[in-house]
Length: 66
Image (cartoon, rainbow, N blue to C red):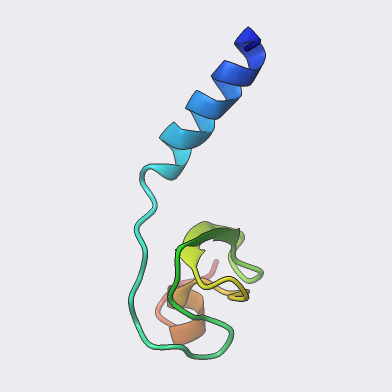
């Protein structure tokens, strides 16, 4: 493999390592799951359902927005 490909894979794993799957019930565009995604509301990465469009905090209204 090429150095750049190895670096990108390692960097991606490191960045995503901090993400924790939220197990709250399905609500307002949020669903629990194992897919890596980006929230349409706050633009943060999250682990959730395949079709989830919001992170659990935004869906439940618990995240402060600037």
